[in-house]
Amino acid sequence: MTDYPPQNSIHPSPFAQSPPAFPREDHSIHEPAMPLETIDDTEHGFDKEKRQSLGWFFWCCVVYFALNVFVALFANHLHLTDPYLTTATNPNLPVNGGPTSANWFGTDELGRDIFSRVLYGARVSLSIGFGAITIGFLIGGTLGVYAAFRRKKIDAVLSVSMYTILAFPAIIFLLAFTAIWKPISLNKIIILLGIASIPAVYRVIRGSTLAAGSREFVMAAKVQGASDFRIIFKEILPNILPTAISFYMIGVATLIILEGALAVLGTSVPPPTPSWGNMINEGISYINSPNTGVGPWLVLFPGLAFCLLLLSINYIGDKLREHFDVTEGKL
Image (cartoon, rainbow, N blue to C red; front, side, top):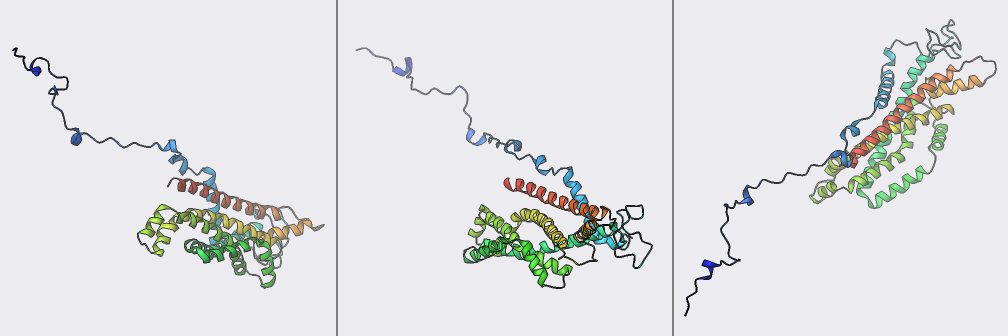
């Protein structure tokens, strides 16, 4: 009987595990973590420099708007000619005089300095614009947030009411109430324009609140048991603030236009209060009258100031809306 050697000693099995040539390291503990993948902002449209650039024309509009606000606030301290001074008190004043070194924008049919009246007119226009839109935001904005947050019946009733009012032209409402509420004054015009702006403000703020209320962080706050006060003031209002700011600026310009339309129709702030709308209305009436010898400066300079202010406010509002919309899309 032949003795065979053990199989493993001559022909090792291919399944036998040979010892590793090098000691095996334990990578489960000492292996460094993979670095987090970085996201290129420019690939996803998150160009920070592009987002923050508002353009030189935007800042020109801001400067012009700031100058108007400064003049409106401190017109009494700028040593201007009295805008109410007429030939009745000073017969030496030139009547319907053209622009000179003493009267930069000329004088009107009563000898009043048009330059002073244009500067003082900025006070009336800005007071009406900012005062009226503030009333609209205090009432319409509050109702819009409350209706969108509560929903159900209160939302349905308020929405139907506001959209019904929006169906009627605001100018008809204003003409009707200015004809009834006599005598017309600056405060009454501000109140009427503020009431007329409530439905538009309600619509915008309600829509923004609905969009913000459906976000994940608002849902999480509700699940965690946060109070309604905290949800509205800590979660919703900061997210609708960009839209509110841009619409606020556009609303100021819109209400200034409405006041100008009322002034041209003779139902706004009564003369002799210097208002751009009143000055344009008076200038048109004198230009259309035969044999008056009135120059175009009666309408040109107040109309130019009116258009430039509206251009600056509208551009600021549109640019802010565009800027904030881009930012909000990246949250």
